[in-house]
Length: 291
Picture (cartoon, rainbow, N blue to C red):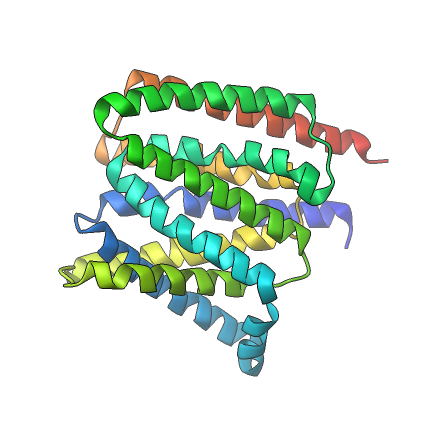
């Protein structure tokens, strides 16, 4: 397959993943119920949709496909399972803009981990982006301390750590099918949240929304993301997070009039600016390296 075709396929999948991820805040704001119920039903529908996808794609080899994912798929499943839980709790305890901007710091973590894990050099521009990220986090945390949203901000950053870990493993083991990892993650998150969610109080309308949440925003988006990882370099792939971080707050602003306070806005702008510049320069360098 030519480089141009690989880039086109990867970019299309990454764009689909970013757009799907960005709807998370809308789904959560549309669900006035306990976050553990959201986690339970979201995981249930995500798991069922991934299982259906594997059954249609692999037919009789479905169980073999799940087993063949090995420890890389299991590791991604555990990381993603935690990210699923932390993401919902964070969105329930702080602003969508906070969570998504903090998640965008995963791009910097990926760049830092690319050296020891993938053998890639950490460029000076990456260190500048890390400094910008730390400054942005400082603004957001100072705002969160005064508003009682610190826990949500901390959880948002742990999601960034999980995303970075997932990306490193997916890039290191490109030949491994990571779709079963999403199923593993859904099972882990569902088993953890179900006992806490009882008794269930969700209405039929809530369950319908959670079905879309689990299928569109989670399973579809994650499958697209992990598949894109097979075609795109890490800096380019991380633009998915930038799409999510930029569009997510816009959707909740349009739908629910949720506007971040000044320090949160400044912190998010600094983080996303650092991410955008770092990723843009990385893509430019990749193009210059082509013959």
